[in-house]
Image (tube, rainbow, N blue to C red):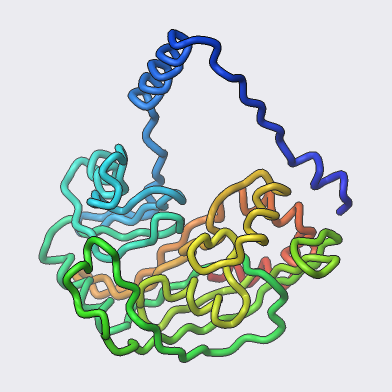
Length: 292
């Protein structure tokens, strides 16, 4: 890969100043019209039976309505309901910027049974993340996390809660180094890692990787701002590089072992190509990803 490959990804945006008040009104009308005609994001059903439905949630889509995003028009819960033709009940959640496998129940009874599995930590969740720096060896990080209170939702909650146990297993799948500086070093290094959370704390994976000094690329809360900006500018893609790749559990009704997996979005493959990770992914790492 060379500098030309990256430079071709850059886009230059030009902004034309309005020439009159009437032009401002016209622009506002066009924006309002565009918002009204906004298309719902496409969701893919990965699995469905009479009790459960699993979808691929796109990055940027909220799981359900929230007071923190009153102006949002689309939510995974409502889109799934419309897609399968019946009411669905949330079992777990994915952060808004995280994509991947999201599971719903078709009844409150099944939802309660599934929630018990999550509470008992018998659900196996597997994520893939692109992080800053090379990780050469896997390990298990047992690092307690203080609860991240929300300014509005946790307004009256206790501020001195004890740190909660948080455990994440991580395994490197591929590493790369590109001849571009995104900070104080002349080159930039990235790693693709498999993350297996054994607990479910708020922003656990993002906070744990930041604790290891390998923040997830695109994480605007716990990540590296300079690195995020560099990555956006040189790939033309703006997202959190974290995907819920698979979910394994015992079906609450049939008691059979279930494994639901999603494919990587095309933008992941684009970035693998830009970073020169293809050679790694063509060998052992590709087999590891396929076996998730």
